Image 1 (tube, rainbow, N blue to C red):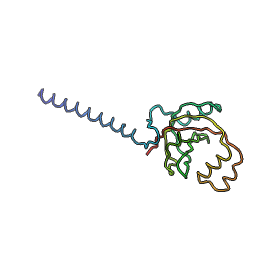
Image 2: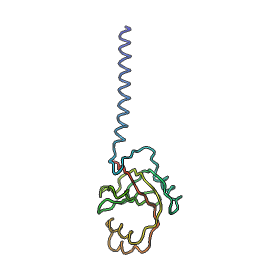
Image 3: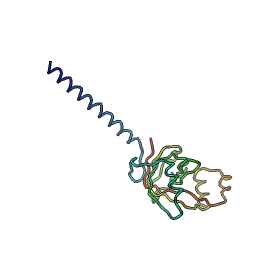
Image 4: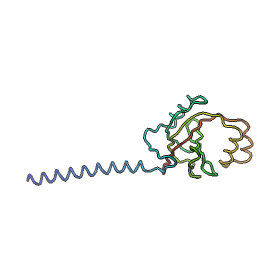
Length: 165
């Protein structure tokens, strides 16, 4: 009788350990559900787009802060994938370019969820540069011609991007 009890307890213990291992493996698979671009980064210590917007709003021209945040891509360069615009909520967005022009994202990445890591700053974008971005973004000639003033923008230089698969 004691042997049956001991064997049963051992069996339950082994099954409990195996079930716990499965849960750990599932969470590890969740972390691997990203495609990486640029420098290898992870999804640890990521802030929300709303908190990122708050940090951007506290910057003055010339300020730079290190930031890692999650957001959704509003628009991607349709020529090379060399820039993207990320949603910051409340009709605000961040213009993201990639460090040293060293990597690009897929041209069809609009509306994908991403995590970006890099440097946040604010800057003024010239009329010529705005027109260039509009052309790369596939805007019409009329939309491009309507650009007549420079734009103060939340800018971001990403050294690494994780795109949710």
